[in-house]
Structure formats: structure tokens, C-alpha cells
Length: 322
Ligand SMILES: Nc1ncnc2c1ncn2[C@@H]1O[C@H](COP(=O)(O)OP(=O)(O)O)[C@@H](O)[C@H]1O
Ligand SMILES: N[C@@H](CCOP(=O)(O)O)C(=O)O
Image 1 (cartoon, rainbow, N blue to C red):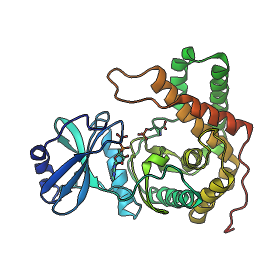
Image 2 (image 1 turned 45 degrees about the horizontal axis):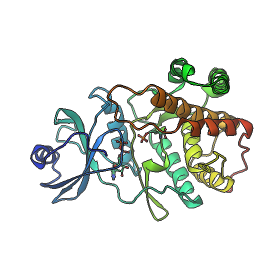
Image 3 (image 1 turned 135 degrees about the vertical axis):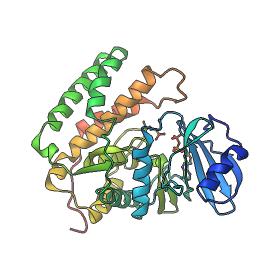
Image 4 (image 1 turned 60 degrees about the horizontal axis):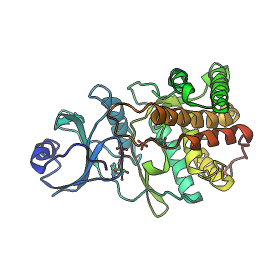
């Protein structure tokens, strides 16, 4: 379910009028999603998505919504939040922060093939470059400081071998983060959660990326690691599929070739990306927030991925176009 707040046509109509999106004809609750209330909205002008934010506050949302607007204006396929005459994109509906964006066509590709991975690589690199001149600042709130703060909360729930792995990986990532090579990595606003379920395709054409609510400023390489760890793996084992990995990396590098330091640190960032989702899944699993509607994902998946990245670091091949 993903309609936590019921919205009537009458309640939503004034917002669509203010946004000059036409007369609202239909609202249909979207069943996917676990965090927000989402409706497909039909007006006499087109198809939109109405989102009521159930967790994020009015103060937190502008970074994400204006980032989506910034990227959409630069031709990146992301939902563009509709603005009123004053340029505002964040509103209040039924007592919740709310926004309206265009509806993306297509559907998620949950069994990606090399062309899908290549499309993700191309779009990710274009997104990174397009975000360079975004002016709002917010760190990745699920970055190293959060992992360091959260690990002690989950240690009591782990067995010895898991705790040792988490402790040693955190020590390794703190060491990497302090290095000159890491600090020189290019960075900017990153999606930070561009998993299979956050991208739409029509056939092999990528039609949109959505769910920017974990975005923040971080290294572009970390974002690349997040994508590879989801799009290019065998989900049962966590093992990287060499063909899909190469397809994603080649496509990314055809738009933005990796710098020498990035090539060197990619194995470390693949580990960082696995650690990030292992920690968040452990936290969601063992310390569910009161009244949370979130259904926790399996933490052992990313424990497996992390062990795999440590055991078999990725070796980079020369890109096809070089
Ligand atoms: N702009 C959009 N265009 C088309 N479908 C969308 C759009 N935004 C969200 N959706 C649909 O709504 C579902 C839930 O959205 P998501 O952002 O993942 O919600 P949640 O934040 O609750 O997890 C997605 O799986 C997708 O099917
Ligand atoms: N991709 C994350 C969970 C983030 O939730 P989302 O549904 O908002 O993308 C994970 O797999 O742990």
C-alpha cells in the first residue's frame, strides 16, 4: 500500500488550478512505494503524480525538489515538480507537505540486461555533470558520519562475525575517507539510491529516474558504486556480472571518463556503497521507528555483497571507446 493519507478530488483541485495544470478529473492511489502517499492524477491537460510526504518536512524538501527541477531543466529524465506563479514547488495538502510532478512513462526493469545497465550509466554520468551548478547544499545524510553513529546501535543485534566485519569495514572506510586521493575525488549532488525500482524503461530506453529523497552531495564515485551494486549483480549471490558491469562503466565513461584516482578507488567505493545499505537495512530491521510504515529490506543481502566486494575487488578494463 502507498496511500497513507486519503485525498479527495475536491481537496486537491485548488492545487492543480494554482499550478495551472488544468481541471483535475481523476486521482488514483499508487500501490507501490513505502514512504510517501502517491497518486496518479489526470487533468484535462495531462498525467501527473501527486505526492504527500509522510516523513520529510517542509524544511527538508526544497533541496530534493529543486534538484529535480534543476536536472529536468537540463534535460535529465527526472520528474519535474510543477511550480506556481511564484516559482514555489512545495505546498500543503491535507496537512502534509505536497508536490506535483509530471508522470513518467514506462515501468521498472527488475531483470536488467546489458543495454539497460548502459542506459543507467549514461544517464548517471549526465546527471552528475548536470548537477555541478546546483546551488543548494546538503551532505549525503546516509554517509560516513551516519554509518559511524549508527553502527553502535546495531552491534548488540549482530553475531560476532558480523560485528567484526562491520567494525573492520568502518575502520577501512574511515581510513579511505581521510586519504588525499579520496578528498580529491570529484563530487556534487548525487541520487545515492538509484536502484532498479527507481528507474523507468520503455523497452531498452530509459524514460526516467525518480525517488530523489536520499540525494545529497557526495562523491560521484560513491553514486556509481551504488548503481553497480544493484544493476550489475546476481541478486542471489552478490557476485558482479562482468558483462553488465562493463556495459554500465563503459557507458558512464563515454560521457565522463573516470579520473585516475577514481579508477583506483572504485573497489573501495563499491565496498562503501554496500556498507551504506547494509547499515541502513540493519537499522531499519532492528530499530524500526515507532509507527513506521516501512517494511524492512533483508540486511543479509548487503552483508553478502560487502563480503563479495572485499573478497574479489573489481578490476577495471580499458573502456571500449578509449
Ligand atoms: N513521476 C512519476 N511518474 C510515474 N510513476 C511514478 C512517479 N513517481 C512515483 N511513481 C510511481 O510510484 C511508486 C512509488 O514511488 P516512490 O517514490 O518509490 O515512493 P516511496 O517514496 O513511497 O517509496 C513508484 O514505484 C512508481 O511506480
Ligand atoms: N534502496 C534501498 C531502500 C530505499 O528505499 P526506496 O524504496 O525509497 O528506494 C535498499 O534497497 O535498502
